Length: 634
Image (cartoon, rainbow, N blue to C red):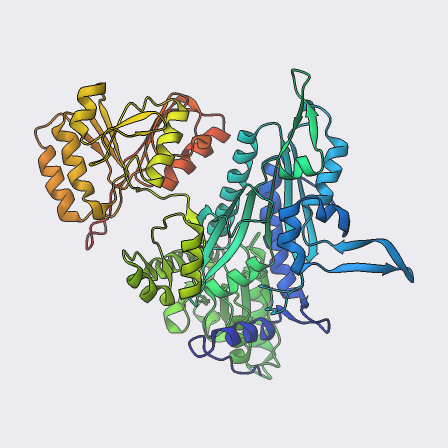
């Protein structure tokens, strides 16, 4: 019999290790810091690989293999890169009984050696883009190993691409980030937050690092995949150049991105319970286990039950199933084993069930009697397939609800320090690295990411407002004025700032107002001020405006010709012409399809999927809207 697993609430770290070892996923190796992935764990990794590899190939990437050993001189070529990885390097100094002329680094990541090879292969703009992925093992010296999460050697995929322009490289970086998020959400049933890493947390040598972050069952964050815009740093270090169409030498723009066996740890910690693993059907090595129950010394009953089992198996099609016919083990023992292994669905069938022409379906994600259903044998295959889909959806919903319940939005530092011990804190940051380090020292909290879907700001003169103003102007939007009380007479990159909206309109004739004012600074009043000044269209990016404030603003708009989009919206974009809001331009392309969506992220996703299909958009409107507590329809 299996050892009793310690409850998660008692010792989460010990629970995690016990589940992995007892479910025969992995074990510690005799080499310090390393692990052995057992067949059941590797089967799960193979399913992860298959789903990701299919996505890579569908987006034009090819697999290749590069050396495990990298010359030390390669690592040292990119200063920031070597500084970031130096503490983690494993170095070979001897080989064949002799000291090596140059030490070799056991691959910690492959930007350097792949960069060298790209410099040999890329000559012309016609050679670009280069889109290569590698499935490999890497070594990083780890002092505190944890199975699947932190081990000295681990498996992963690392993509490396080269492009002619920064725009193409950035689009690749964000496209892969979306690909990772799609995999995590739709295959692993893990809701993730897509975002940008702070400067202190980014990949060594990268221009910008992006991440998908997930909440585990202990309410802590796990970085589950990263995508890096490397700029031209590695291209210049390894002289990756191409001859452009004008016969001029240019350095390439490169990216790198990866997901590792840490994803298995994420699946275990997101979904597991006190009985063991709970695996999402789309990735589970075994989706269905069939446990025939036969009395001892009754061959006729045994034959009838096994014949019924054979009939069910013939109808299951592509379902990954296993028949546990170990009749020398009790049904309860077998049930416990498959529950420990997290198999999503179990069929129980015995003589009594057969007499009623039924089976028992038991869901792993709903333990006990509540998860059991009686189903006619004739409907077994169809019900199994439907139930697997239901389990997948329910697991994702359960994970989303858990994350959202344990995500807080503190408005003061004291409130931040109080809630950060119990989950995620979605809080504003001034952007100062010194402030980031102070928070880390005082609370042990780190900035996991700056979310991609993040409305709000501090007006045109604030960090967020200034940034998005620059982005809108660069896209072609005619930004003619800003309004910030007390800042009249100043400017932002040549754009005049006025004390009031009315003054700005009188001076420039502006007909649209884009509002970044935070809720705590009376964003609703800004809406009313813009309407009073005669603005025709208001796009309010600000989020979390109190309901009663917006009720007041909405009533104020009655009878006026002003239209309001928002609050808490991504804005409006006419691709290729004008952007009023915070949408990422790369997701859109001109065309004839209009999009209206409430969700910022889904607006981007819908547009980008259409773009990938060659379908452009005429105008996209993100209508936004903060939820009204107590009203699930809002």
